[in-house]
Amino acid sequence: MARKSSIDWAAVEADFRAGGQSNRQLSEKHGVAESSIRKRIKTEGWVRTNASKVRTKPQSAHQPARTRPAAPAKQGGIPPESADYHLNDRISALASRLVGELEDATAYLGEIADAIEEETAEDRSDRRKQAMLKAISTRDRAETLRTLKQIQMMEAGKAGKKGVKEERKEAAEKAAKGRFARMASPKLVVNNGK
Image 1 (cartoon, one colour):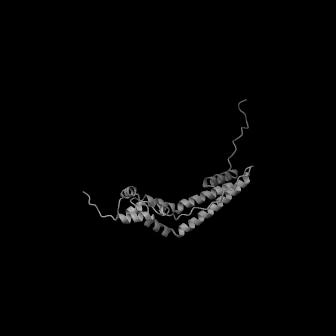
Image 2 (cartoon, rainbow, N blue to C red):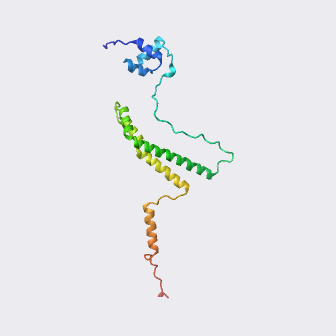
Image 3 (cartoon, helix red, strand yellow):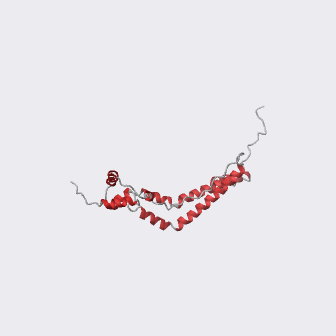
């Protein structure tokens, strides 16, 4: 049979009524099962005095990107030229922010990795840690930046750098037009069939 441990329910109730911690945090602090705390709350009718201060999720260090409010649409719609212009501006702004993030992530990569190590030290599996490390990897962000630049170049009408196959094909066609051009088929001068 399990031993009953001495639990200071008065302290648990006082912490609950203070409203600074969630039931799970209280259970960890006082070494009591969360279900036991919920049972006492229900049977004894405990009420939080300052319930608005309970935080169940830690505050995120991530700050969302600022977005401009959407401009009201005109009755005639937006002309396609200006839509492309605004798209190019937005892509340029996004690319600038990504470059800034890449610079920051590169400059503070060691500290960020250490913080991830500390946060995931008690995790049972490495999946969370690997996902966090992938989120700060420069490869994914650089790939996104490259894609944005390609879209911007296509929208601006600039032809991007040609691939190796296209360059070789053009070189072969150029060489085939000059001295090494294909010879014409021979002409039949005498008709022996008549």
